[in-house]
Image 1 (tube, rainbow, N blue to C red):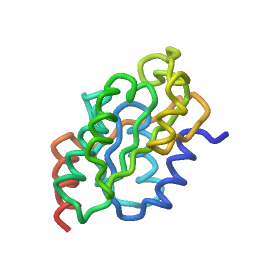
Image 2 (cartoon, rainbow, N blue to C red):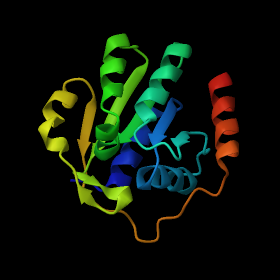
Image 3 (tube, rainbow, N blue to C red):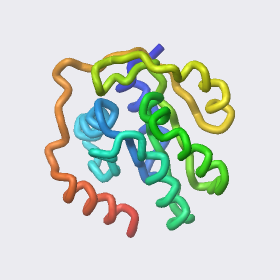
Image 4 (cartoon, one colour):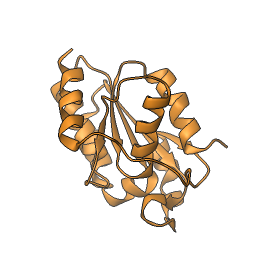
Length: 161
């Protein structure tokens, strides 16, 4: 089983220049750090201050930009917080939207509390890609060195291309 960071790195190899919407917390921080390490632009949308909202944001982008491939990266704990977003995404089923759930059975970003994702994991896995990872993150995990406004500007630039 991979670490979340290694799983994200493998996903980035496959995503290419697709639009990425990522949940906040440690996963978003790892994504930002990976982009820097790989020498790639940090033009993803990391949903800072909106835990659980990545699926809804990604769905809106996919519906408004049908020519763009949109990848939503969300944690199992974050998805549980806004489980209704999956129902809405399945209602519309845009072909350009891929929801990827990173499952570590924890609310890792808020202190490592266990969650109950295992009770719905099989169902979610029939509609989304679920990747099981080891819990935890690098103790020295940095934070994005750009402001939320800069992040939005970069993401808008990527959508416009």
